[in-house]
Amino acid sequence: MRFFFDSSAWVEYLEGSFKGEEVSRILEDNNEIYSIPIIISEVVSRAKRKKQNVDISFRAITINSKILEINPEIAKVAGILHAEMKAKKKDFGLVDAIIWAAAEKLNAQLVTGDIHFKGFKNLILLK
Image (cartoon, rainbow, N blue to C red; front, side, top):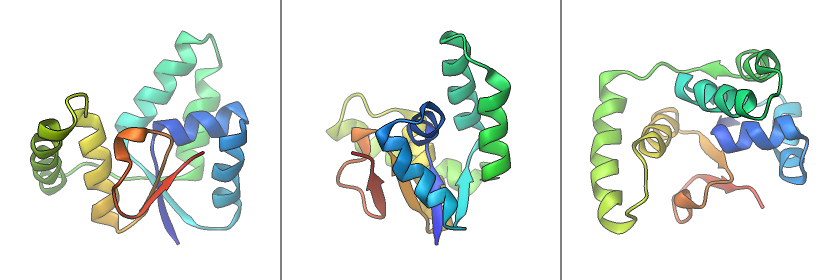
């Protein structure tokens, strides 16, 4: 199967949390895993702020997933989604819209702990 991990999924995995165990099971099942460069930035930033090894975070993502580059079509879809979601959820971020558009482009299940995505299709909301 094809999965798209957002930042929260990688953080849970790296912390070895209970939610991270679900992420780990997906990784261990030889699935196709995808992320985008901004997720690397978010996870590395968090590691740096928590005084953790940023190289471990970087390698975990780049070794265990394929990195999808954001093209103009994904950017357009993300912009439309962002505008629509801002009308419903004032704190829905542009990065969230980019993540969703990228997962949709891949027809992948989005793995996240972010409740902003609750109600979206093809979603695995970590609990």
